[in-house]
Length: 502
Image (cartoon, rainbow, N blue to C red):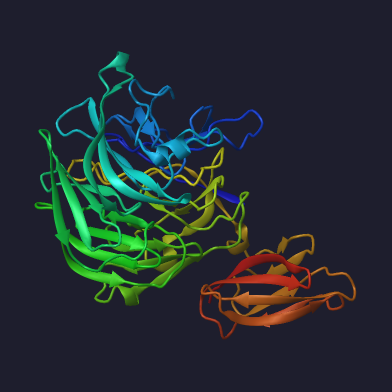
């Protein structure tokens, strides 16, 4: 492994999203369970363990003040202050059957599902914050839940000696069949007010509200595009607010232009990569590249292309890493440092990172499991809109110091050995011929298989314990990342990846 150190100068920015919180409540018996804080205020950015008696889980949102000081956060069950105590009147959030089922759990008390809440500072105030949150119901079994209520709760940070208090709670805005996940907001064209976007479930109807300093106006409804067939996924506005994307791997990406004067969507386009599982979406700081994730892949699309679908580039295929569970791809969030962070559908201690999301194709530098956290993240990623849109601050600042761990098997020309079988595949990157050796016991054999990023087999070799070195020609392969595995009658013995470069 090697570490890259990158730098930030965030002076003068509105820092509402500068502290990210993760993790299950701390346990004296499991050092990988507990709170993790990512603090973008510091240089280098810190990734610190913190003892907390709160499990955050996937229903994760938080807010700092404009100076980057944590105000409060929520796991969907409680609103918690900066000292990690339930805020005054901050209990019993999202009442109903789902609360009763999940929030009273002894093991992991948190509200299920992702991207269903976020916090907005009340316009033209310095101590009032709105938490917008969706509530769920359960049908027959906890395995089937659906969103049917949109609430807001109002926090006044001037109360309780600056620790804050909830002054309005669970105020019902809408009762309807709402899409799970896919909940976000964007600044009005005036740079002060906010449009809140809440799509409906299995529908092409979109509900919006306008948050001003005086009121929450709405709901306003618009039907456009196609009806969804699936829940989950993620929705995102481009950093400049001109594009809105609603995405699930099964439905694909619904892409719209946004009029921030009236909150209306237009110019519908559909990108349908025909993926499976859960997934997420993010847009690069320069507003050009859309990244869509699924369990096994991350794909990039050029939003400025005449044919967005045809611009598709696979920039990552899951490499099989576990930490301690499979580190596949799930939801994505643009950070204050102009990098995109991606979590997994399992509670791992790593995040993936797109180091240069403004760059085309593999130049975006997606580093799998590149961010090592002090504890497991708990299938969690905070949900932040772009607070700096319409202000004098830039959307993000790329001058950041943060440790990124890079797997040298694709960054070095040295021989790489993996597993107890001492499988060596070199040089890596390779120009013409790969050299492969494996220390199998005499008389035993295995199959070495090479696949492309789509999982399509490109070739294979039979390896045995008699021949020391095998040669595999890559002359007919296109430039890119390929994946190999070694298997025998016992199953897959080891796996890895190799870069073909000319």
